[in-house]
Every structure is written in C-alpha cells, then in structure tokens.
Length: 268
Image (cartoon, rainbow, N blue to C red; front, side, top):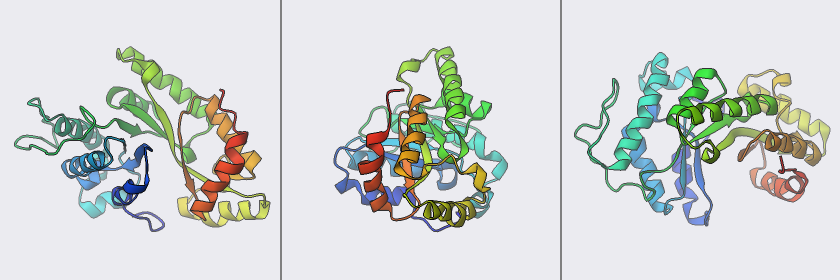
C-alpha cells in the first residue's frame, strides 16, 4: 500500500533472471510476515534454484500499518513475527528434522521441496534503520545488514555499523565476514540544479511525506555531488549501495556508471 504504484518485488525479480548473467540478486526488502513465511520460503527457494544460487534475501517488517490491515495481521506483532519468520525460512530451507516451533508459526508437518541451491539456504539480511533493538536483531539473526538510504547519514551509518560488528563479535561470530548494504538509496544525476530541486520537492518529498531538509543527503544532483555522497558512505564502511533512480531509470544508471562511479573514492 505504497504512496506510488510499484510491481511486486519477487515477481519482478523472476522477470530478470534470464538477463542477469552472474549478478547477485537481492530483495530489498521482502516482508514475509505479510506474504506468509511459508509461502515466502517457497517463492525464494524457487528464485534461488532458477538463478543457480545467486540470491540474497533481504527481509524486514515493512513500514506501513495499512499493509498489515489489508492482510489481517496485527501491526504491533510485526517484529516478533519477523523474528519467527526468519527462523522458519531457515528451517524449511535446511530440510532437516530440527524444524521450528514458535508462538506464531510452525514447520510441523511441512516438508518443502525443492530446497534452495545454496546450502543451508540463501543468506538472509535484515533491514534496520539503526535502532538499538534493530541492530541487536541483525547481529543475532541475520547474515548481513541492510540500512536505509533515506533514514541514515554516513555518520549514523558508521556508528551503527560499529555497533553491529561489536554485537556480532560478542555472539562469537566472525565480524570480518559480516556484510552490509544500503537499500532505498533514491538517486538522480543532473547538472541542472532546478531539475534536482524539482525531483526533491515534487517527486520524492511528497512520495515519502518527508521534509525536504531530511532528504538533501541523498545523491540527487550533479555527478560530483553524488560521487561525494557515495564516497562518504564508502569511508563509513558501506560495502554495497542499492540505487533507486527516481525517473528515467535506465538512463540514470548509465549516467551513474559513466559520470559518477569514476569519481567515487572507495578506498575508505
């Protein structure tokens, strides 16, 4: 129930499989609580099989109470249900006798086939804007962290990333192998300042219902401005950024490749 129309993400992902070469494929983010974790496990397993094991599964609770109203799931249960959903996905993909039994979901009597190509299943990255509880959840349950481009800054990202790595290490896991990415990184490259301002004020701010000043940190503007913002995130420890052009999607990706990436300092 978003502010503008968009395709179902998992369906759209299958449409590009044949043209995706050896690229990793990612969901950013799927909401298993809304779709149903068992159905989500089946769909994602199919995508992993069809892509020959190239899937990264990004999940989160979503941010719209209306979505939960539509499917008849209490909004206040979203985080507890997400936790159990992650455990249920892994249990179904493992295809072992351990199973999962929670307060909301259970794998009792469920046997899923085929299982994913990746064993014991595709990596699961959890989306978190950076709250203490969210970061601890990422460290406890996830195989990677997805931040939100319009809900962070390089400074906030760096602080949250340090906290996650501390929690991961405290849990006895290898923090040096724990990945991250930034999703919902709205972007638009243009040398025309008036055009950049119009994209911010007439497209993005109304869509997100956010004040303009909260959105000016996004890569919207000249190639030099965008490269500076990407470089700041690289220096803060960001490993991947999932771009979301606000218009002219193909041309924007070409401009980023041709005019922005050569200026990005990824050495940080």
